[in-house]
Length: 94
Image 1 (tube, rainbow, N blue to C red):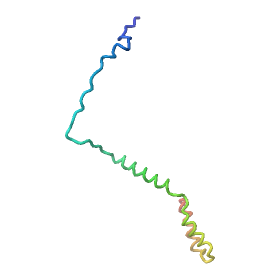
Image 2: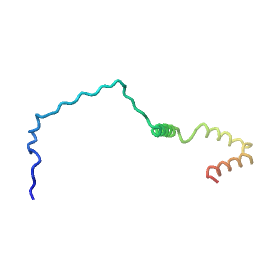
Image 3: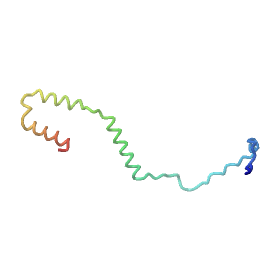
Image 4: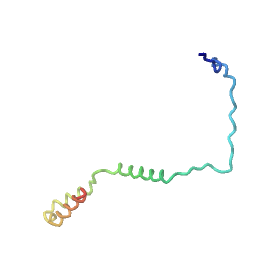
């Protein structure tokens, strides 16, 4: 079996043989891009995620409001207990 050389082994041989770059083709149309509907929806989701991340997990104003209500002995009644229980069950999907 013989192995033939495919080219010169001298890396400096092709040093002076450079090709000139072609000139860019000019058109009358300005450059433009199109964004797919999937990319738009992904961008909306990303924006929503950023809003959620920047929003605090605990709303201090609501916590303070509930604390004030709970200090009132007349606040807790059967209607409040039932609506709270329904909300808890609904959050668990029951």
